Every structure is written in structure tokens, then in C-alpha cells.
Length: 190
Image 1 (tube, one colour):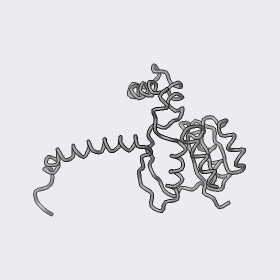
Image 2 (cartoon, rainbow, N blue to C red):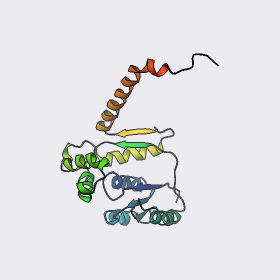
Image 3 (cartoon, rainbow, N blue to C red):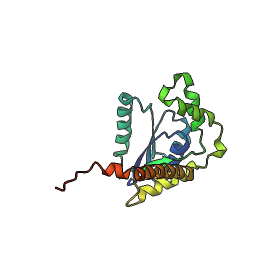
Image 4 (cartoon, rainbow, N blue to C red):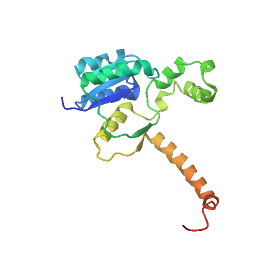
């Protein structure tokens, strides 16, 4: 087979599962890393020989490396052409509810407690999320075919607005302190 081999983590649900489906539908092959491979069984049956699942906790490097190596050997390679940092907005998936249910507030690290509490509060708000995981997956496949993809790409209008707001604030602060910043330059030219 001459098709590319993709590596997709978080493949058992949401954006990860949508990406696996989209990549397979486009004729390519996938190594899918997941905690649970049962949700991927229909895709394994629909695309025989083109999907290899790796059921492992990705935080356990001792287990991850040999299992992942076996999957790569099975396809003969893993294609890594270029990298785009994808910053997805809130998508209509079960991530928030699943994440919130796996970790009690008492077990959350203090620095992450606000994030945990925000995810728990929004767990039932699926309808208010604008992102469509299937459409996000389509865009990721398009990115892989671009000769010069962007270094970063927000997915969803909410992600775009959040990044624009953050960058506008940073730019405003840079301009406000530009004179102070420039005052540290040498006074003599070299």
C-alpha cells in the first residue's frame, strides 16, 4: 500500500475518533492510540488491514514505546511530514463529562483545580459548543495535503476569538511598554 500512515491519539472518541474515521475514509492507514479500543471496532471491521489500535495509557512510556513500535512495524513506517499545532475550540463531544467523571475535585492538583471545576460545570452543556468534530477532522486531512500548512491553526470560531482576544491584549501591552523595552538597547552602535 502506498497510502500514508497516521498516528492519532485520543482515538476512541470525539475529535480523535472523527479523525480516524476521516483518514480511513480518505484511503489512508491509521495507528490509533486509545485507552479503550472497543469504540473503534466498527472502523476496524469496515477498513480491514488499515487500522491498528494501540490500547495503552500514553503517560506510561515504558508500556507505550514497545506497543507503538509493534504497530509501526506492522505498517512498515509512520509518516511525519510536517507539524501544525491545532488549537480546537469546544466541540460537541463527551470529553468534558468523561474527564470530569474520572477525577474527583479532591484528587485534582491545586494548580489545575480551576480547570477541573470549569470542566465539571460545563459537562452538560454540549449544545452550546459550536465545534463539530467531523468537520474538524476533515480540516485536519486537508492540512496534511497542504504544501505549506500553517504552524498553528485554531479550529472553531470560539477558538479563533479566544486567540484573537489574547493576542490583542498582548499586543496592547507590548505597545504600552515599548519605550521601556527599547530603553535597554546599547547606546553605542557596534
